[in-house]
Image (tube, rainbow, N blue to C red; front, side, top):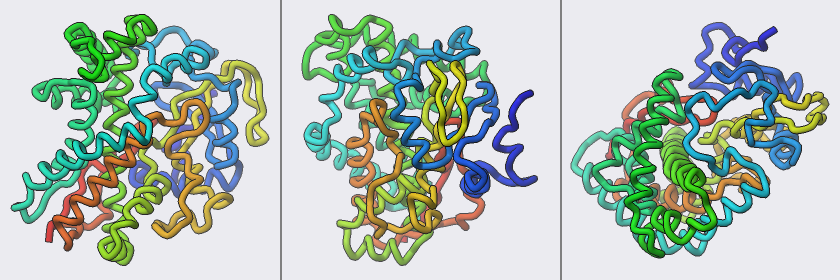
Length: 393
């Protein structure tokens, strides 16, 4: 018998995209692990508790390679190469080592002047407008420009690339997702062929050149896909989510204006409160295991709700309160274990810079709409605002 979907477990008429957390809380109150049906993916064990989520993310018996799934037949035509999210050690370790040096805190510090220049140019472009949708005009283009500059994607191709990326992370249909995957794979393959292949030219150039003896063609394609998509989609939601958290808590926004050093704390609290990567990639039990008192059979699918874990009252006091003075740390927004997000330092830097530049230029920001009807884009893995209209003051 098919398990119920989250929507079926929610109260009748409940907007799950706008408020998943009350549903998670009700489920978590009866146990940390539940069987649910994920549309287009099948039944899976959903992990909601913080301790159980951390245990699952660190358990080597839960693999990312879909071939450990009892129901696996093929990739559905939507795989683009073989990337770090689809592999396990030792292959994952080799792939990660190839690019890890580009995302260390020290290397990210060298990117900060370029990120700030992009932020200033974007804010200047709408400075004369009374109102602006901060998602489409700022939170989206900034990380797109940063990651495309880093990888060497031509400026004229970026809107098209983003449309493919958005379809893959929040599919409108399996057909559309398959078409976007094929188009993006073809585009990236061409981009890799044309990359200069010299150290320092671009990250993509280095992958196509120096790293070629360490990565196969399929692995280079998968790495390019993962870095391009993961390198911006999540940060869009982190920038807009942090602004939403502050703008809906004006007393805390006033404190940030008074002390910009609090911006980093606001970003950390937003990672916990508005977790952009809503859930982990699917994991598959290579061997049977017990998780939170639930028996997971070999071949079963497991999905870890990073968002639910980061609001577990057993780990965080008053978890549904946005509080930038909360002691930072403990959230699972960037995952845990060997698959901890490689781009975490870059995402934090982009968001901190984006907020600082915007708040410096507009010291009287406010929401230009009642926050209640704001629309949240959600999929299996990601959640973020579709629009966030601001009054620039």
